[in-house]
Amino acid sequence: MEVRRQKIGEDDTPTSVARTTDVVVCGGGPAGICAAVAAARGGLKVLLIEQYGFLGGMATGGLVNPIYGFGYFEKGKQLVTGIPEELVQALARLEGGTLGHQRRIECETCDSHDACPTHGVSSLLSFDPEAFKYAALTMLEKEGVEILLYSRVLTALMDSATVMGVAVATKSGRQVIRGAVVIDATGDGDVAAAAGNPYQVGRSQDGAIQPQSLIFRVGNVKRDENRFRQILPNLPGRRSALSVLLFRLPRTGEYIVNCDSGIHGADPLRVEDLTRVHAETLKATRDIMAAIRTEIPGCQDSYLVSTAAHLGIRESRRIVGEYVLTKDDVLNCRKFPDGICKAAFPIDIHDLTESPDDCNPMLCVKCGDYYEIPYRCLVPCAIDNLLLAGRCISGTHEAHGSYRVMGTCMAVGQAAGTAAVLATTKGVVPRRLDGVSVRRALIENGVTLSGAKC
Image (cartoon, rainbow, N blue to C red; front, side, top):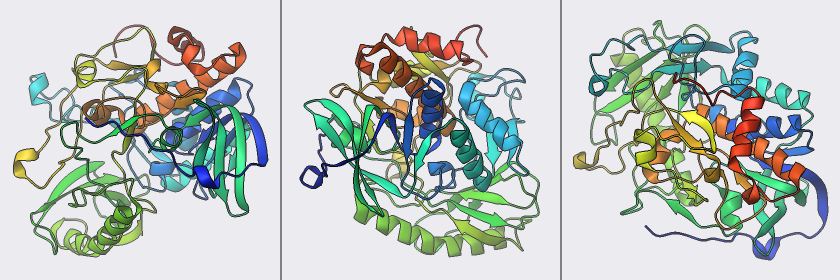
């Protein structure tokens, strides 16, 4: 597998410093939000940078719904706790904010692991995207996090192999922001790539990557199911029937529609490909809506409410870290001394090509068990003063197919923020931290990492 290196924007880096802070969190999605809260609670001055005018990333701008990864197997036991669960509770306090943790009713109806009717997806958390924006904003403000919206990270500021901060494009011009620790929660690993850390993209043998989707929201659906799948007939521009998933939102009659774009081979790191896929999927939305009204009972009078502001990106850069999580680690439920979060979502890799011989069945983690992500996956292998949070952490293509879901990414975010606190307090770069101490600090802060299996 080719390992790529890339440096971005070196010739355009501004020199005047606009801000200096303890921790710079790049990206205001689910992982970045939890990272910023954790760092601020540790007494650090935190600045969070987000390219949109709102927080939430894929949860809001991408309309990705529901949240997977909390592993809610039975009441009182779940895999992801801590700050991510606090955000869930903040949503619950808002009218129409969330339906809460919902265990799939199909659970415990199978006779064996191989016959799992949910393919290992035991729970889901549906939420309102607008409520998520508000809950995230108020949580960050309460913790004293400085937020810089409408700002896009251009490049990393380097001193040899050490990140000293980032250069940011804003409406008021380019700004330099320096920080003792930088957390890359961009999803695509933009900061780590700009700093020159090696990374991988796609399947090892050929670089094939999961297709993107444009998720959209519909209203006036006269059904009352939390989740249902429907196969739609051939549509214009598609070679085969379309499988769509509809997920109920908290407000009556509203659903999120998720279906693969059917466009394979598009590079999520190439702006021309993103433009093309977004345009084609936006136009296809009209045909899909017409088919939904015609083919799905209870949807005859439904209508399009909105489309996502950003394509749903399932996969892009995976930054090479001090440890690379593998498929075997996931499926064998491996635990680590420096494990910083629990995860149990199946390996879910959407079809990478149009070939019917290239489908990828979901591979389930053993029912009732889980694997852990070690702290070392959050530490880039070649760059100091930088931590990773979210789906860009270090892992193989197959392992990424499991840990890429938002609940797990939120837990990783809290771990990154906690590590930033310990590194700053001890006066060391994150690489020099003992991952066991990060795990211990998370447990002390209420994260469930020890004890019996869920």
